[in-house]
Length: 254
Image 1 (cartoon, one colour):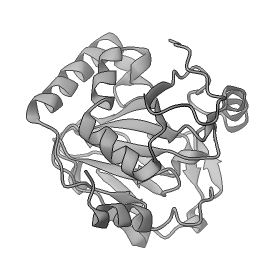
Image 2 (cartoon, one colour; image 1 turned 30 degrees about the horizontal axis):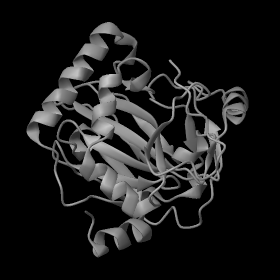
Image 3 (cartoon, rainbow, N blue to C red; image 1 turned 120 degrees about the vertical axis):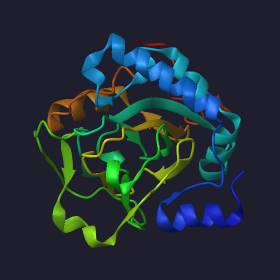
């Protein structure tokens, strides 16, 4: 469980690294599953936006009791997993992720998600670890984003430079098996990997069921923002409690 100090840090800074590490065998299992995914779908070499659409074995990691307990402490007892993605930065030429806010991409209203970012390899400044702007979530609003079509980026929505000061960025350095939890409004990104070590990270996206996953909005967002991938076909998995909104669609999709 998160300590009171860790919960306070999450709300103050927009993220926290819990004093917990997943077992080595779990990380090895994730690596094996990811290797299998890439062997079948080499187009996901750098970024797979929805691993559950291709391999439901990844759902096992979302159900890790320690992670689910911590998420409940942060967003309440009623929540769903709506996505799991994989940001893999191969050694030497892993792509950069631009500065952004997650909520810019997502059809969730009200906007709310706690993301778990699991380090599948050691994640360091040298191989492109996650970087965040502390406290940038506090206004609970989305800053202006522009479309950046560069092929050297994993995502194509980039926050306008005037909205943040990169000098305020801090690196989230993690050992394999550690993970961070971060707020949907937190400004974050990561540099390219030019090192000789890979940097794989798996994300789990949990939303409180007081919010609604709006599939019609997902279609509109993909069209208006020219998103690389749409979210309208995501399957929601109720992790704990009930659908408080009464409007979420949990039908299985592929």
